[in-house]
Amino acid sequence: HLHAEHVYVDLSRSHEEIWRQYAGAQRRAVRKAQKEGVTDEVLEEPSTEEVEEFHTLYSETMSRLDAEAHYHFKLQTLKGLLDLPEMVLIRARHRDQSIAAACFIRSSGTLFYFLGANRWEARQLRPNNLIFDRAVRYGLETGCSRLHLGGGSESLTRFKSQIGGGRRAYSILNRVHRPDDYREICRALDLSAEDGEFPAYRQSLRRILAEK
Image (cartoon, rainbow, N blue to C red):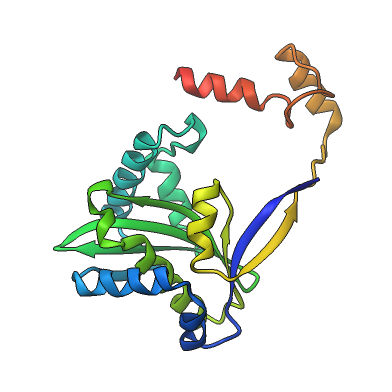
């Protein structure tokens, strides 16, 4: 079924051309970050300490946003993800401190935005804007044809639209590959395999995780 619209940046052009396509607010924010001394850094093989630093920043961000339990990743999960060769971490630093960071995935010529975190008290330094501009440059450097920023809430989509001029609708296909096992799991949890959220056991798993 049709799910939503996602925002993307076409990387078939030069950075100069993409820069001109940015909304004025994005260009001003990147310039402000640079003027304030914020630097960006690409970490293709982050160290254990760098992953731990990102996990702390990410956990603080999820707690501040009162995010649901399934958005709270354990340190070991993030370590496993960032060990993958397709993953890259881009961070923004100010006065030797990380104030924002984001994970991206490279796949089939597309750079996908995955996870982001930032220090609330440093938001006026505009580190997120700087990170996404660095992601554009990194995508160009690595031969990607598109930077996929995804969607989100109305305010988040509006922010992403300052960077990416492209919009594309996307759909979700729900398919059960092992129907007998799926029905067995649903029966064990006293759930209907036909009605409600898909997969039917997702809500139960969220409740279990929240109780841990």
